[in-house]
Image (cartoon, rainbow, N blue to C red):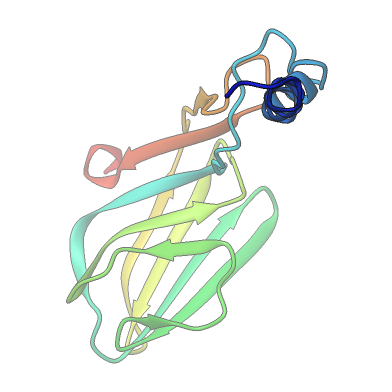
Length: 150
């Protein structure tokens, strides 16, 4: 049997279900389709030839007057917050993160021998906005094939 009490309970339930949507509609994203995806600034360097992960590797990048280095032992990097490396038996790609230099110098030493010593010039970055163009400043990322830079 339908009663006034059930009707009031139903209205309260409907109100509680609508409140979160109402709160979102009056927050800072009114009229925007924003997400909370993350992206990073940086440049991906694709090596002309892969470098073996065996032994000691030292990757050094000089850019905008600063030098950043990362040591790897048998393919395992130490504490290198500005670098990311591909996984596998050899080094093929390096991502230099949180920086967007127009020019840089890459040097890789393998077991104390220099195997890469190369300038990378006129890097062109593309901006992306994974959360929507009106939601945040987005990020800038470039991919450089070092074979084309030789």
